[in-house]
Amino acid sequence: MKRLMVNMTANSSPNTSVSVHPNQSSRAVELGLDVATLSSAEAVVDAIESALGKAAEEECARWFAISVLKHLRKENWASLSDSDLDDVTLMRLVKDCLAVKGFSSSLRTVTKDARSKFRIVGFASSKKIERGVLATGTKAYKIAANSLLEAGLAEGKAQQESNETPLKKLAADKRSESKVGVEKTAVERRAKRRGYVENEPESMIDTLEKMQGEDQAASMSKQEFADLDAALTKSDVEIIQQNWGDQQHEERWSRLLGILAGVGFFVFIALLFL
Image 1 (spheres, rainbow, N blue to C red):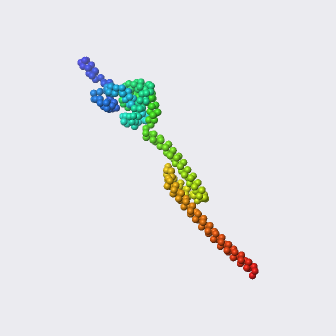
Image 2: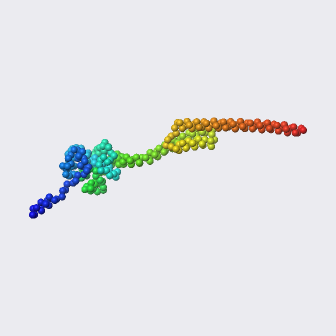
Image 3: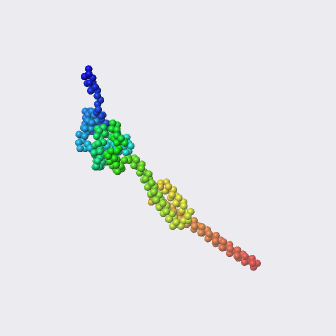
């Protein structure tokens, strides 16, 4: 009876092997490994490393770098394909990290537990390996984070575009304002050369400002300058014709008044001698 109880206790002892993470199992399948025959994370990691050989270190660093990028961006990625980094950029980043002294040794220490290799992990101030969380104070994390920041990858494309848009818009507005000012000055100078009084060219300048106000970002085209020049020339002709008509009218009145004055003078002389 006692021997039976001992056997039952031995057979019922808990299995200390760690379950396989989905990232690890999918990577093993990609390498052509039979995951069904691998009962633990340790067995899967050993099989992956054996299949990769010398490339195992780069593979481990690849998953680690993506995990750091996920943490910096505060994303919720579940696999490598969830990030917006292409393979070329990612491998360049990995090689940059591996080239830094101390990264490889720190990475081996950080990922010593099979639950932290070939998978996306989280980061916090203290590690919780059973929950897939590593510490941010390690040399490996700091080197990877610094490499990501220097490469300008810590911010996603959408965030970079949103940050650049206000700056681009401000620069475009400044260029547009400069062009509008130059064009307005040119129009005013041409109007003054034609001899307009201050109130006469205002309508044409106002028309130009209204045209430019509709789309300040677009500069005045050659056709618009040609139309404006034609309008100014037409105004010149109208003003000249009006001035010529006024001058002829004044000359007729002057002649009539001269005749009347002469007649009045003769009448006055005639009355004196009557």
